[in-house]
Length: 423
Image (tube, rainbow, N blue to C red; front, side, top):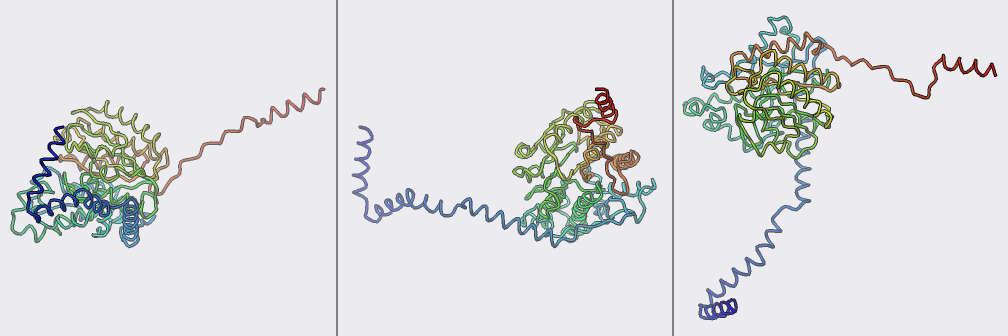
C-alpha cells in the first residue's frame, strides 16, 4: 500500500515537470539500467583478451632474454663466483646515512683474495643490466619514477638526500648503475649455476623490490629478474627460492603469487619489516620466527622445513638468499644467530642441494652491521673447506643398483644344481 502510494505521488510530480527535465530524467534512468551495464561489459577485458595480453607479454619477455647480454660463460679455470667492482654504492659519504653497509661487497671480494681463494682472474665479472632486462620484473612507469631525485632518495630510505641540488645529476651513475650491475651479477650467476652446479653472486638479493615499488634499500629485484630470465629462456621449468634473510622477501612473493613454477620457502622474523600480509599469499612454506631466536632452535627449524620443502617441490634451480642480518648483533634483523650458526645454515642449504644434485645460486642480501662482510667471507671459505664449492662440476657417485629379488646368486644356483644331480 505504501509502495503504491509512493509510485502514484512520484508519477504526479513527474507529469508537472518541464518536458526537457522529464526527458533528461528518463534518459539518465535508461542509461543507468541498460546502457551502462552494456558498455561496462564491452569495455571490460574478456578471458580471451587477458589470455592474449599474457601471451604478448610472454613473447616480449622471450625477446628480452634472447637479446640480453647478461648470460656469461666461465672458463674452466674460473670459479662460478660473480663480482663487479661497480657493486659498491658510494656518494660522497652520504651513503653512510643508511645503516646498510653499501660497500660490503668489495670488502668480501678483497677478503677472499687475501685468503688466496680468489685472484684477479679466477672469478666472473657481470655485465650491467639494461632497461629491457629490468622490464622482466618492473613496469616502465616505475623505472621512470626512479629518475626523480625525491622518489629515489625515499626508495633508498635517505629522503634528505633528495634535497641536495646536484643529486639528480649523479644519481644514475652513483646509485642506479651499481644496482643494475647487481642484477647482471645475479642473472649471470644463475646461468653459471646451471652449467657448473653452483654459483655465488657476491651481491644481489634485493628481495623487497616489487614491480612498481621500491623498499628496504631495494630498487630492482634481481632474483625475480633472474628466475624469469631462465623461465622465459626455457633454461628451467621450475625454481625454488630459499630465503633465510631475517626479513620477509615480499618483493618476489608478490611477483610469483600465482606462478606455480616458483616455490618460495621463507624463514623470517615475524615482527620485523615489512610484515606484508598480501605478499604472504605467495609463500609456499612460511616459517615465522619470534624475536631473538637462537642457533639451536633456528637450525632445528631449518633442517626440518628444508626437508619438507623438497618433499613438496623438486626445482631445476635453487636461488638461496643468504642474508646475514640474522646475526645476533644486527639490530634490524632482531634475531640471535651466531657466526657459527650462519656458517652451519649456509652449509645445510648447499649440502642439501649437492645431495639432491640440484644447481644452487647464492646471493648475499641483507646485513646491517660492520661484521656482515666478514661473516659472508668466512661462510664462503667454510663452504669451500667442506668441498661444496668445487672448481669443476662434480657428479654425486651413483650407488650400486640392488639386484632384483628374483635373481639367484651363483651359490644358490650351484646348490640347486647339486640337488638336481642327487635326485
